[in-house]
Length: 131
Ligand code: HEC
Image (cartoon, rainbow, N blue to C red; front, top):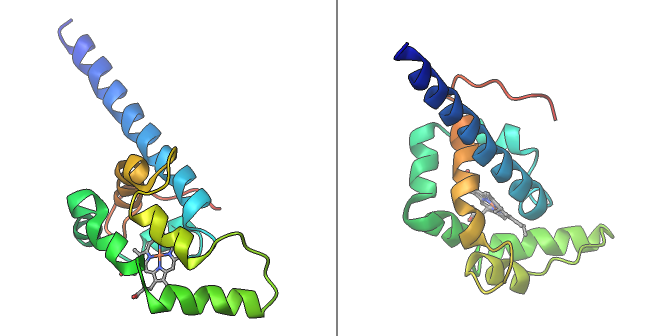
């Protein structure tokens, strides 16, 4: 009979983790997908350990890849030249990664993004649904 509460907690834990990863996927679609490919493909680029490093200190390393990045500017210029209409600008990317935006800020979703990438990392057991 003692097994039952344990089992319940285990199930609760599992579903809570899924919810966090799901939130991370949503944030990815909203904030990252324009420039990167599908989140599930991106997750596979790194191992769990590598993702943990990128997301250490509230995602500081990941932010460094984007803030004032000439590569980000070049990418957006290319989109622009291709006639892709985007509301996103290098300034907005900086503002997001430096937590100068309100609401769904980088700071508020970084934990979820981390969970998402760890869940689907190259060396994880989870197989992502196609998307
Ligand atoms: C405006 C376009 C743009 C947006 C938006 C963007 N990225 Fe990037 N990202 C880039 C570019 C360009 C690089 C390459 C920078 C470099 O290598 O110096 C990069 C680099 C990265 C890297 C490091 C590459 C690696 O594999 O080591 C990761 C991880 C990453 N981005 C994830 C994200 C996530 C997560 C988000 C959303 C929270 C995001 N990016 C939003 C353009 C973007």
